[in-house]
Length: 92
Image 1 (cartoon, rainbow, N blue to C red):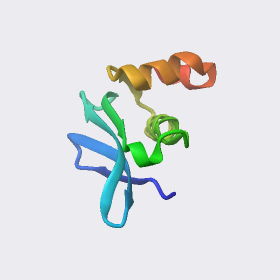
Image 2 (image 1 turned 120 degrees about the vertical axis):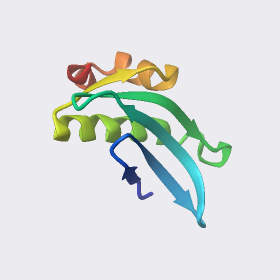
Image 3 (image 1 turned 30 degrees about the horizontal axis):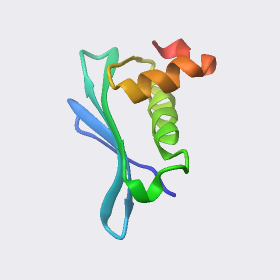
């Protein structure tokens, strides 16, 4: 599945569409130029069990590393994924 990304400079999202319908999404907001806040992650029931939520979180972490910014994971799901995976914690 192809993870798409949009960012308007204030907020953004990583998402997956299927048949032109958004089936999974992780949203974030910029706080200044050095940090993003992950505020929501949602995966449609039809994709549950495929690890899609974790893939979205990892994509956000890769984005943060590329942009040299930190992440504040306010979304409980994203926080749990980052807390479980030490290799993701260097962006906190």
